[in-house]
Image (cartoon, rainbow, N blue to C red):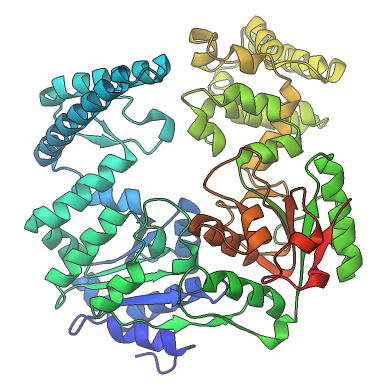
Amino acid sequence: MIKSFETPADKTIAECLSLDNPKSFFLFAGAGSGKTRSLKNALEHIKETIGDTLLLLGKRVAVITFTNAAANEIKGRIQHNPLFAISTIHSFAWELIKGFDIDIKEWLRVKLTSDIEEKEDELERKRLNPRTKQTTIDNLTDSIAKKRQRLEVLDTIKHFNYDPTPSAVNSNKDSLSHSEVLGICASFLKEKSLMAKILIQRFPILLIDESQDTNKDLMEAFLFTQQSHSSSFSLGLLGDTKQRIYGGGKDDLGATCIALNFLTPSKPINHRSGSRIIELANKIGSLIDDTPTQTAVDTNGTGVIRLFIVPTKVNKAVAEQQIKEKMAEITGDTLWKKDMWENEEGATLVLEHRMAAIRLEYVEMWDSLKDLKEFDSIKDGSSADINWFANFIMPLVQTENPFEIAKITKKNNKDLFKKADKERLEKIKNNVNKIRESYANNPDITFEAIVKIVREGGIFEIPRKYNEESERFASFFATKFSQIIPYSKYVNETSDFRTHHGVKGLQFDRVMAIVDNESNWNTYNHAQLFLNGSANDSTLRLLYVICTRAKKSLAIVLYADMAQENIASSLFAESEIIVLN
């Protein structure tokens, strides 16, 4: 038995993790409070107290995380101990329902039939409205046709698969999408007692990180299971209700857990940020909900915040560089002026990916790809077609080292070298040289020209789509190949830029948060908040997240045409507001 605990919250959690007397809990752990550390401590406690018993019984502890990166981080912290099954919510749900093909088929039959009826009713209403665009009619008609076709082939499917690739959802008749896997699992847990028994038999303890953003239907199914089997199942939820920024989460999770008699430990101390940054976050957080505010650690210092109001008709790149220089002057921290921040040194946060594309100068490439069905995988950097350029052609033209050139070529074309005779090696060398020379002689060379050079060489394999579906990629092919360089840095998080949503869970010494709404999304309106002190829930939650990323200093940048005297000062002191002219 562990004799001591780091915090009272860790002690409370440990009391829940028992096979004889399991209890369930919701841990409120605000930004920078050490939520992941508490999760690790809980897993260590399980290992030392009931780990051997669980393994002898053939049972494990399940840990659900929000992203693959978070799953990998936790696996590393516990040294990949087989006692713990750590996965994302989609993977976990699929492992539960996998193999129940007959039940899945019947669920899909009901769901598809219902969807078709709803779409047909919607189509009829749209047709009666003279203002409805033809594209809307066409999209609805196409959706109904695809659902009917899927319904018709349903009985021919023997086994279902889950395809986690966003761009390939339902690409095969036996593939299940993200939403279908979650919907099926939630339905089975609520309606089929066997599924709940399977869950508890495999995993008598289930811990869910970032629980505030976990799919609402599945979360309710887990809560239902816990209430039905409270004597044999411990459900542990960890999260920060203020940071619920994704659609689909359960909005009353904290209140629900209290109503269900969950234990509710909290971690009110912020170990990350300076006290002024925490004070700002507390003010924003109090406008979101009444969960506990945070307390600063004295050793973190005060921290610096500034709100910069910048006229809309300016060169934004110049303005943002001026802000960095101003922050360096205010803080005495010269790293604010550094061209490229590394690791946790700093980050520039933007509302959407395209804002980063503009600032990193690959927006033409970005816009040429945004209408493709593969765009989801292009956004997250997992597109094999785009990565052919990013992982093979790009590094090939960026190095002068002949050994590195050979290494890149072999890594991306392994089959070519299995039986490479002298003639083939010469062809490889010639084509590599031609690619490199073409870029060196013309830095503005297009993607199309690069593909043409590779095709003429007749040695390297080109992505199938570029040959078979070249018309779909015509706009992309016409843009400059050099834009793949900043794109690759961005999706691999080696540039300074991150999105507001994508930065959750990270921390940086210096943060410049650009809250400009370049796409005019109705969801967010920071200008309204700073003008009259009011804003919608989505705006407040996102602002809370981006402010709590900063450890030492924070610059919030709003592009708006307003005078300083018109700015509401409830969040900022007058001296913290700077209007750039």
